[in-house]
Image (tube, rainbow, N blue to C red):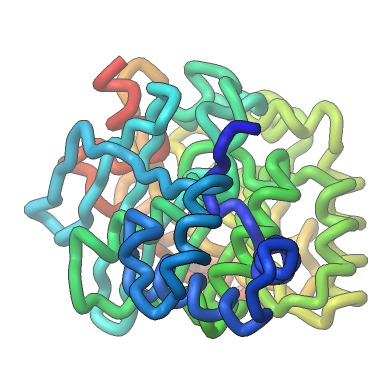
Length: 343
């Protein structure tokens, strides 16, 4: 039997494996603390485990970690972006965003993406494969090693890939990220972003975790959204909005709608009025962000006046609106941009 990364096991699974090895249940918490709080890279470093148990673990498990290929730090806002090589040679990106009151890691969930949103650099290579649980966790561990002593306050699954297309691995990783013996990051500080995979959203309703859900909207016009978000053809906007209403009712959670503003595409007064009608009566927030220009994609951000007027119409109509600043534009910090530059 080939060895597997021990980080791929949930605590319950680890307890079961330890029991099979003749070890006490509490050893699982010890292993978790070594892996996620100390960040060890070798089982032999888990010094409070009996030597015999460490030997048994080494026969079945190892600890993998990614290799840094490139990193960039923004002169504009301190955003750090890392290009990481996985064990099989594929690459992903992880971004660290520093703000006044929070430290956020933007996580990838797949190598590439199958959904092909036209404004997103991740779409250019298509889907290569899902990330494993351990590879997702390694993104957080890598940033923690790069920035020792840093307290990570927030995690967002907004990097390369569609998180709900890798549902099982993402949810398993989230439960480990939330575990007090691992990272101890509160569920409400973990955000999952989706382009609108309705069956997976239905599954999320039953998870019982208070994480944040963001839905990539980008237009209230079905024809426009269908052009820039191809998933709309399989999961039409009217069905997506019904699913969002249902999600809010069943979880009593607020949904955030992500809206990338693109000049000549979705920031006219008509677009704003359409968005007000679409979201009327929905307990939600709207995150507006100007498009982060990607080479050869053919879109541009709106000018400051146009973006402000668009936001003002939404606010005037009663929506809870936040305008986010693009981060790391000088270091290609849009999803997939650094990876593209290295291909």
